[in-house]
Length: 501
Image 1 (tube, rainbow, N blue to C red):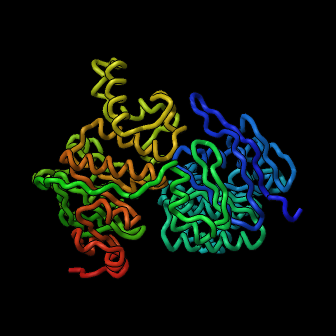
Image 2 (image 1 turned 90 degrees about the vertical axis):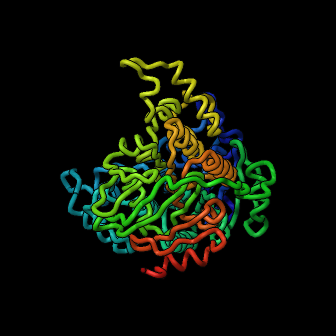
């Protein structure tokens, strides 16, 4: 049994309406190893892992655990086989507490058969303390950040004594310090003989933990190699089926216009204070900083999602008071949220419905929907954003993360915004799709739109921005112009704070 893979898949196939997601997919994972899976968005990585974890059932093929053929017909069956998964798209119930979430579906019972809530909260408290997480067991999930929710999901997965643990883009929303904690936990699990399947688009992470690397493309297995025998350039070429000479497109020369958005001394008495920045027409500025620096909180306030208590916002030189999202949209400001699932998409509705969601006034007249005009407008902007789907009636929840992101861009472009705020626009997106997103951002700036980009990936900000503001502890700590760009300079301001005057 020593050479028998702990997890083996043979000839797995999966079809959705109009889409062949997986075809003749075969690969195996050794016990006591970390097996990394690479592929473009839509290649089938998440679909494959959802089959292993019982969320989907395959249309063909076989699954073996420790040499024994098994049928995994539900997540509960997967748990019985000691399989655990951290999904890319966070699935959670906002109104339940941290403790309820940790034991959901596996609650301890009293001798009378009811849920032992006292034990639930006591065990949750002990687990949180053991893992070094600061949340209270009675905190509701809706009060947590994306980073907190991701760490909670990771802890839940590894705390269930699973033998096979799947991580689907686990670091896309957590800090570098939390990444170190995660990798330490993965190394501990590997040492105990667990089989780890790890999906990530962050190549710099792979070689820190990978034993084996598999590449899949268009739903099929391309190759599996030991991590020591394959380099990043080869992985990218296998993923996209061609050689990518540059990860970033060349930055186009643009003529900058007047100041489109100016924020002066903005504060909310709690999360940020005295924040000032501006962006001109045709310009791309970046907001850099560590997780929790206040970047997202500031742009949410500018977009009318949260209130502010001091400072002012100017649009095209005129002071404005943005109290609601509708106010922002009327001022032709758009914002792509960092949390697609919570704030961006309606998963059960179609691409067309999601794209038209904030522009209903364009094709609903006197209470009647002009379906022909809606299709024309949505098709035009979706093609421009290069949305890939069988058709635009496809449920958006069935699309890859990259294509969901393009639909979100299409939704806001239908409003014809003059100021575009993009919060982590390439989170969880593969290298090929990132390239397309960068080209779209450059095109939008060339049209004279003002673009604000928040990103935790410093090379991304350096490659696409004209200026970068760096935030730390709720304040702007410095502004860098293009000749001054460097990862070291940004991190110095983000960690040390720089000049506070």
